[in-house]
Length: 258
Ligand code: HXC
Image 1 (cartoon, rainbow, N blue to C red):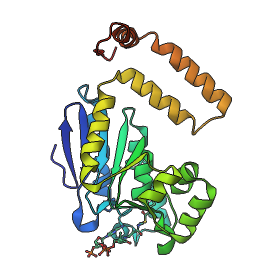
Image 2 (image 1 turned 90 degrees about the vertical axis):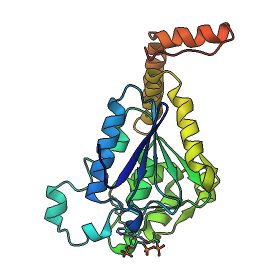
Image 3 (image 1 turned 90 degrees about the horizontal axis):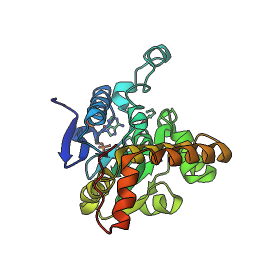
Image 4 (image 1 turned 135 degrees about the vertical axis):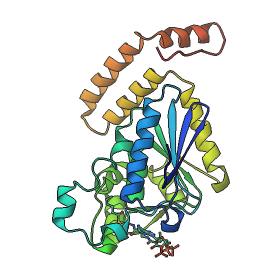
């Protein structure tokens, strides 16, 4: 498929999506988000892909929703088209793991998109922020909700109310990102991490992802019961038999995604 706003690559079992609107710092236009959703659909449907990396350029993961495209929209426009719902949310509904590899700016919708992924690897130059308030609007794709769950109320509130950016070191301390790596290593490190996941049992990876995500949405008791049911169900897979047999036999497992 020919895309105009993204690049799509495969590295073994890893699908890589590179946001590619350099002139607009990867601002998330309608065209870009449509293509992003299509690329995620296609990797999700591809049995040869076990994990996905979403990244941008060195200067910007994404500088937010496209302000020029949004500026003149009316309330009726955004309400009737359900602005930012369908394509934007695709990253959060993908059943395969999606790693955000963030270098440079991840602002507004860009920060929100990164937070929709399963975890964020940051380059040392990464900058996260929710500056919508400085242009007369507010987060609309989860910034006020996901950021608060990631970094707590005080930091999230300050960022959403002032638009202050957080650098990579602060983001790591606050728990927004899983790790910080040198800029030049970011893509390789993300692909290496995704490959490690893609070599595991896909059904068990998907169940694990579901269980961790459930922690954001439910009580501890319900979450623990959900986890226990999924844990039990891994024993119905051939991959659990293979994984444990390989450990006992001191060899590498050969998972079949069954
Ligand atoms: C459209 C954008 C853009 C954006 C940058 N550009 N961000 N175009 N939408 N969000 C364009 C600029 O207009 C410019 O194009 C080019 O990219 C380079 O940007 P500069 O500003 O010249 O670069 P620099 O001086 O390095 O500053 C970088 C920056 C700044 C600090 C990231 O661009 C910036 O503040 N951008 C906006 C960030 C923001 O407010 N994001 C939140 C958007 S609202 P031209 O052709 O003019 O030179 C949002 C809503 C989310 O995300 C809610 C629902 C999803």
